[in-house]
Image 1: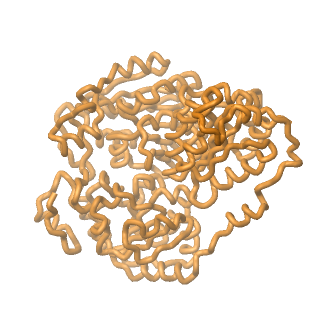
Image 2 (image 1 turned 90 degrees about the horizontal axis):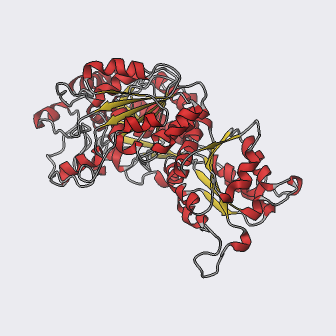
Image 3 (image 1 turned 120 degrees about the vertical axis):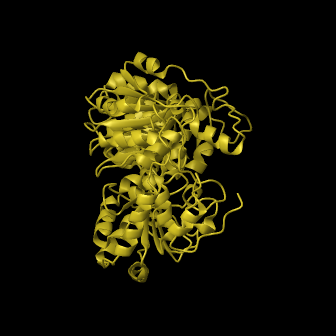
Length: 587
């Protein structure tokens, strides 16, 4: 059979029903092999970056995604979503076309021989778990099997196969191809050390002895498919839980245990809970600076810390750890649940948490008359959402408003570009989500800056009639960086307001065939949200905000997590702390 047919057969057998791509000459064999099939289809996008982000969202919901691009510029345009999958641990197969092997330069000291020839394997290698140029058609089975195994095994991530055109069109005998599965390499890579019973007992003992325990839920819980085990653990123990940005959709926000999102843009009451806990169980979080703040020595400083992560390089990398557990979060929780940990008496701790929630409300920014408060709007949008909605969030202020104030219902998913933090993520991610989960409504939250990065794929919404509701938070500037400039650069707003322009986005989007409405008055926000989410057709709701709109609270440099901006009176902070407060920092 033709090798490109074999590749498509293999991808389909992995449960992948859609391959996202932008066609180019070097993948025409692969695209042709998809044509006319009933079990798998191409989803043609208008930019390779958009195709990659769509495949990433598909993978987050379906277990594996796939994207293809042609050689040279097409392959290079996949790098941002490849990096996004790598940083956020998403299993995705990226396939790039390449010039014929007899046109490829290999080790010759020239820049290029074939048209659009680019060594994408070398360029992508720091951002993937596995990347290979398949030179011999007889290696295709081994390379494909190894790629999808590595994508899913251990800490998930992206893999890349670069297929020269003469390899794609080669004739092969599948029965004679060498296998990866069952090979010595497969057996070696499959070896997993079980969690020692002593480690589990030590963790259970630390939890039992604590009086102010807290669980920090990271993105690794979703990567491990461990949300159900986490729910069982929290229900059984009654422990309160905070989330990182990437862990937000692993916990039902209406549950008594949910104590909000921590970090630089977390809620003040969540960070107060973190600062005052005496034990912190970290599940699948790398504890990056946006969670810990710049002063890592002050992070949960009164707590003993149990850090669970499948990647040994993340354990104890930034924060001192009492117990480091190299394990899959799901396996750890399953084993811990099997020990039937007792339900501790946390009435005093919950009383303190309730006081924090009361004294430090989520929305702190005073509401100006006639102006929509974005956090209030996110609360309204969440109330009008359905339990099976998928929310895709872009990068910028819109991401933080959604993360802070969109209270997720049980069953909802929130897809976020975390580590890469790429503007332009939400729209193509929404397309991938809608195709991965037919029948479910998708809400794409974005800003005026981010929507312009991949606005070309608004076309996919109308052509495919996808049930995607685009919510555009439009403040006419690049607000996140503008706020940063206001704080640290004397309000010199170069390139965020000065030099930045925003056209009439509603008219542009309507030209793509997606109807829109605009709301700018708080009194009309609720009805606008309800109307925008109604029906099954794609639509746009543009929410007009002022350029001065900010994300608050926010952690400023050199302050501990509990001391966020706007800075509260010192006596109020000291009174709220259950542990000894730190001296006023020299900012």
